[in-house]
Length: 283
Ligand code: NAD
Image 1 (cartoon, helix red, strand yellow):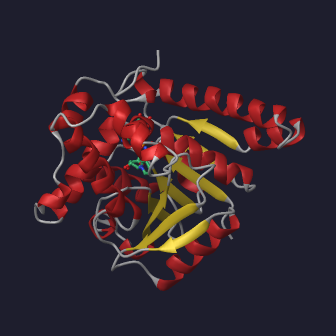
Image 2: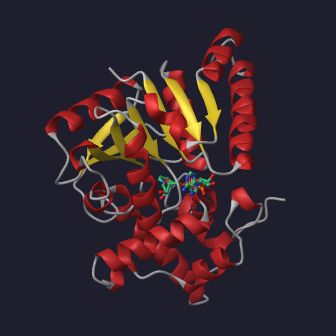
């Protein structure tokens, strides 16, 4: 039974996953190295909760209960009582491995250590642990509280028991689970690469603007969001790194080739909604 949950990284995904676990009744510790990120996560949750109360989806008691279930912490050690930890920090293998090997020193032998990585090898992340059989990928989609699907990805080292507990826990949190193999981009991010990649190439070839491509995909293709709106929503930095990782991991298969446009946007800090500017202006 998973009761205490530690979340590492309080950005877009970490904050959302914390809300999901807290709503399901878990006691959550949300950790980030940046105080500003913790403050933002707390302020954002307050706004989200207020909106849910206004809409009549929860009452003020429930709001208080969910908020009280989350503690914001600035030391990894505070996660020591966790039954499950989910990491949602920068998409960088070495950084994740460092955090995992440090975390393992603090938590109990039974704690499940999961990553929300979009594209990195779970086997490689697991190799940073003394007990790699407790490592698993638990991949939420953005926004985590609204998106039903969660991919659960066992590495070749992951034990059957850890997979079973992880799947049960995520289902208990009200999500639909797809168990995916530990391959680059898993299922959804692999299928999604050409959606972004071809849209960027159409723009780069001067065929259509961001707005025209988005509008065509929504009006003709019936997609809820166009590729540029979606990349701005995900974050251009995060989306670019995922494309780069999938491209390299498939031995530079041109189907997954990243785009210079997205790279430049990411380098310029035009990250999308979270920075106020991306393919569109949000200021
Ligand atoms: P983000 O940039 O919004 O947040 C990352 C947070 O991690 C930041 O607050 C940062 O301060 C913190 N951080 C960085 N290094 C840290 C460390 N060593 N210890 C503790 N905190 C640290 O990123 P995000 O969009 O939430 O993505 C996080 C992870 O989730 C990535 O692996 C990404 O691939 C994956 N993911 C992202 C999305 C998405 O749509 N954004 C969807 C699914 C999965």
